Image (tube, rainbow, N blue to C red; front, side, top):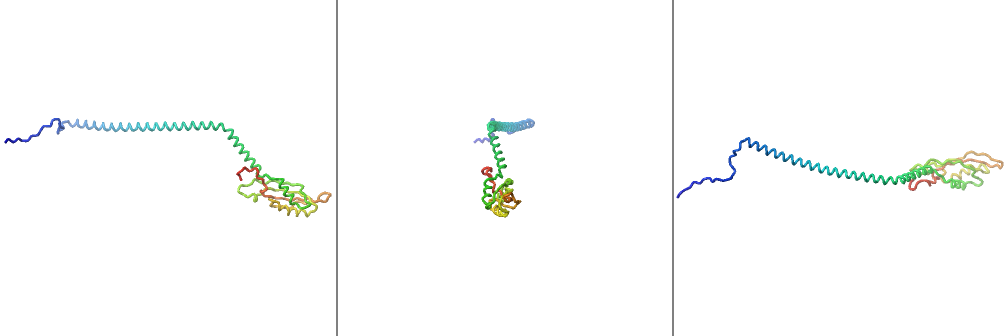
Length: 218
């Protein structure tokens, strides 16, 4: 029997176990690989920057487009409003005139009704022959008309006796809106022996008609 010693088989094309490259070549290849990796990182970063710039540019174009569209719409609205400027100005003028009328007529009085109320309470034999009245100030918002002075002035009467003055003052204090009635001058008149006397009157603002106040405004 013949014994054979096992030997190592030769592997063709296998990776050599011993690196025969010189150290300088190994270092050169390592640096070359490192440079390629950094180049890849730079290219990737450059691509990302370019993509970000493109996205920002697109958003900028869209934003400018929206601003331009809004500006065109605003300009169109301005042109349309310009066509109504006369109407707007006229409406404003009407409002101003209403305000002026309200202010000017805020102390308007119904003179005929007031005089009728005075004549109704006069004692028998007393006649109203004259008056001098002045409307008071404009009503103050938030204050009751009965708490504000509306009219001040005088009434002149004639009567057959001097005692009629006191009776007339008592009756005038019953007139709606009168808050103060006092005696004024008393004189003996003409050949018929009549007396003329004056009463001073203060009334509140309940006598104002308020007819010039705009609807809905107090």
